[in-house]
Image (cartoon, rainbow, N blue to C red; front, side):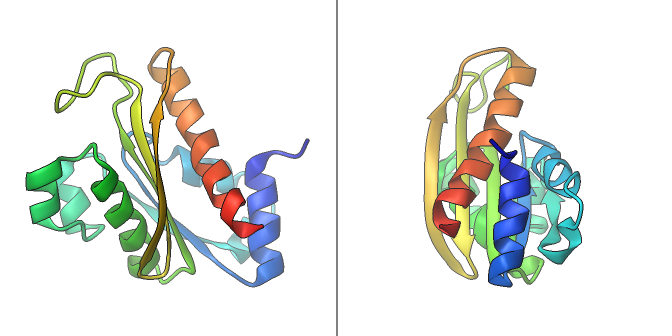
Length: 156
């Protein structure tokens, strides 16, 4: 089976569409995985690494009200991150990751609580809540795989 990043780049290129990312707990790993694919520049526009909560608002455009009300680890935040990635990077699609890789809890959420979001332009398409197991590195790797899976599910 072909790597999901390779499939995503091929499908986006075939459709003439583009992708941007907004990553928190993955720290740029989704973008790195995509840019490992030869020809990625035809479809991948770039990404925002918004590890710090305030950067989710400042760089990705997540509403301060959302962060105050729901926190950084939330479905709403993942949705707004995805919209912000698409908008700020002028891409067809925005893909986002936010959550807790561990080892400690964040905002009362245990390690492994992750949200991956997808937007098409200014419209949120889907956000998935994940409960992942493993150490910090395993949770981050699984998050990248799940984010790419979400994208592929919507690319057809």
